[in-house]
Length: 423
Figure 1: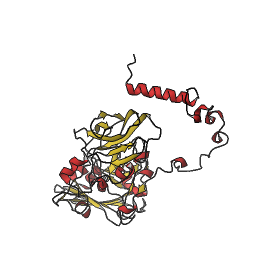
Figure 2: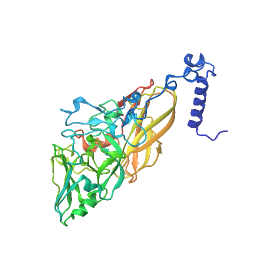
Figure 3: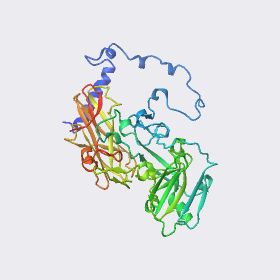
Figure 4: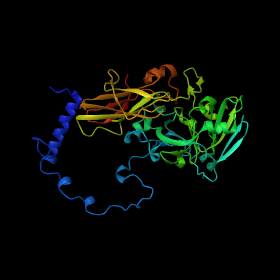
């Protein structure tokens, strides 16, 4: 008697049969495969009959045309103008944890600007011993640090507060990306300027026309904040703040100021537009809760999902998803196939890094029946991702930001997938 888990044994049996079917060896095999040898194997194909592109055909390189659908997308009606708007990462079509820069979502308040390294300046002033101005070359002379971190817009999932709205994992949860950043710890620049004892807050301001700025407590600024100029091993893209942006691991994306031009030290928060009228949580009684900086533990199943229906029919099915927490590492992800009635632990694939995306997988054998797929993340603090109803009990329905509630996908018998909520 085999000691193999049932799902592994069933998967091997299925795949063995599928291989035999492809060779025309199984009675009752599909007409397409049982009629004879597969010409893709037995006949010489065009790609094996002539030369391919030379090494310099595309000096930078780009995805092959078969993957042209894997792109950022926007929702036209979401904002009044595409200049002050957002698009979404195709997380449903990616695997692993690192987001290619070309796929990483954009959020602009006045459009992506072109600022050269030669024209770039970073000023540090306010409550410091020595006000300073750095050129880009100056920054390159400081000791560097490398960190991998997720950036999530506070409004990610915001359209779902009132119920299931948008079809597609990309559109419901795609205001997120995860990259490896290289830059100078902000701590070193502040030490160079010398923060005065009365300095308690850091105000970081962007060079674009919106002058987007946010206040950050000094303790966080001295901890893990990075003044970054590389992402995934290359210079920042224009839309991600070239040549210099702020990286604030675990905290809401609006604080990751792009094209950062000034860092001011103050004895209190500046209370700018982006931390008063925006990026605050509107409570049921009409008051707005501010300083919700940390993005709490969250997860989403990326496949199957509305943009990735099940096309292969019954049998082995790989459930894939992402989990993250601004409080640290993800320690466990549970998956439910029946809308939260029963849960089973998923496999965390690769290293679970602090304040970075974590990939999880669950391998099941799908019998073709309907599923209500959910995932819930647990981080190293013990925090458990809540249901949407649990969040609504506290925050009501008028909120836009910080929705980390459990997402539900309804997998139908034909493999199509729909965004739903479970009553």
